[in-house]
Length: 205
Image (cartoon, rainbow, N blue to C red; front, side, top):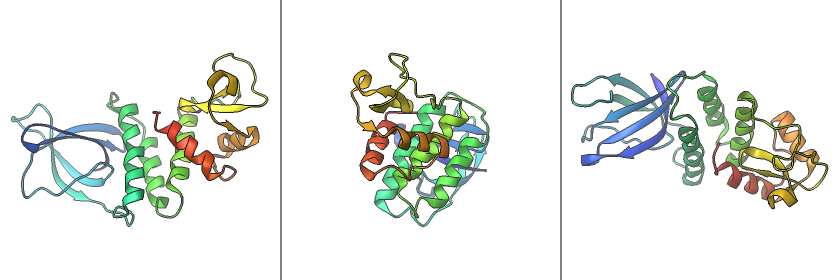
């Protein structure tokens, strides 16, 4: 079985509770500490086996193989990746089974993470996620006053549109955000605006 590590919690004696996003489920497994165990980190994609045990109420994570990518050793890209995949944990942690959309979304990001600006990849992926979940507010109605946004457009957590006077955040060109929402592309946005959107993204899905 394969999955992405979206959370790691240290417990007694350096044992770990590891949460994985697999193609059709979220798995929370116990990993006993030992010299023969391979090193694992948040964000790694691994091949693994699940083993039930009388020693733990959680199934055990066994036979781990890191399915490495060429950018895993690139510190800055890996840090951005870890911040991104951690958001999947907070968003999906209470769901046992799910569609393969989320796993495939990470797969598509992994394939190009070394080629493009990772922040742009993450933002475009998040737009796809919002659209998939029916939470993409492309009608440009202010979340606060419920009036149409004709100018001074800003975005808040969840990329909810708002008037600047209602949210007091960075403003965006209306057409640029419209293109982002419709085409799932950040090409019209400057790097400064990408950094603003990245900070909003980190507030949570």
